[in-house]
Image (cartoon, rainbow, N blue to C red; front, top):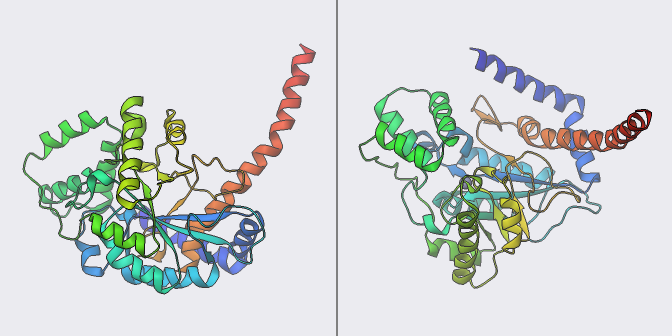
Length: 347
Ligand SMILES: [Zn+2]
């Protein structure tokens, strides 16, 4: 009940922001600041697969919603390719960049034709060690097992349990999953990753291919040597198979702490993307470029139909608020330094 009320309030607030012109203002401010709005997608699925998949709600968008969203992006924004644009400069519309994480099969079969039809370039961050596999990521397997063990379990409960498991070390988590669910999982048929042939075809179609580590490891949880191996090996394999350098990276789960951002830069990646919500600004750290996640829930009204207001509220408005907060902090910093210096002198 509380969740429904919260969601209703959030949707009404999005409508208020649209009607008051605040969303237009936020988009304008970001555009004039030279920002690029980088969007993160994972999966785009037809209705049947949307209902059947074991991927979490925060990762999936319905095909029909993506159609509407792509049309909205191409009309109200200027879609740009990941290697073709830099923040800064004067632009007629706010620039938007579409990225896909993980390398799911549906990125090529469902999302790419829609994006192309609307003139939207895309970038895909994939894990070379997990291509051409059925459900190679543990959250889908855990969700699958939970749903079989407890039929009727709510999506929110599954998500909460998986979030708890994310906080554990890999060894701890694997042991726990083995103990809880000893029987083999039966992956949902659409939960597959791309093949190398798919990746080559996408490259020929103009898709930018980046690394998402070799095996989707949460890098700060690894020792520095293992983290470097994940970062380096994936870059080498992608470069060899595509016969071009791989200079873009996205952190699995967005985790870029513990010095792994320095490893990524040392290994020769020019740009690295996190999942921290914010705009890509001219002064952003290129080793931690913010993005905004897009899921069915945050671009529709009650999962029923696409809403531009809701999409802009959950992505653009939040980016704008992040930019304004950072500016306030920058303005206050010299004042605090002066105050601290004054306090120091008076001691
Ligand atoms: Zn990922």
